[in-house]
Length: 168
View 1: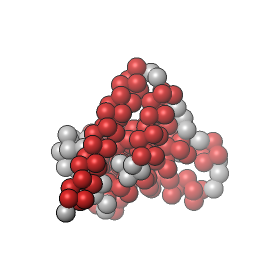
View 2 (view 1 turned 45 degrees about the horizontal axis):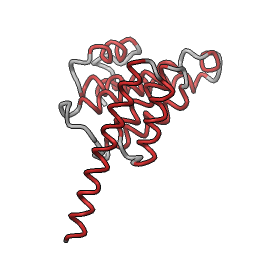
View 3 (view 1 turned 180 degrees about the horizontal axis):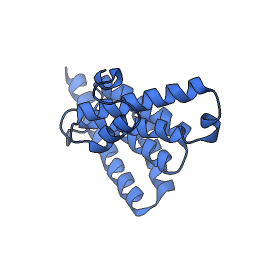
């Protein structure tokens, strides 16, 4: 039992230290020091790859710097970890963090739809991205009904409340 307690205390100290690095990375992002913020998010994820919040922030950073493929990968992993119960922060109400993750992935997919290779490429790829983006926007709004942006895009992309995508 003492080994379990020591391990638990070590884990708590590790998470606290990672939390401090996370806060610093957010501050650096706000200040426009994108490169250093990216480095810190990656350090955090090397130490604990199951944390969804740093992965979401890294996805947002990649989205904001037009690295959509990297953004999508991190957003998908963050959502997987959240659905598996890997939420790190308890500062937001239940459902809101997952809603943000769905909205983030939806926005990344929506932005991919603007790429000429997608627009003029295979129609099935365009339709799949459109459908998935719409479904994630709808899921974000269901989880957080105050998220009017996701509601707007879910409807704009064709997932009105009467459609199957709006009900899934």
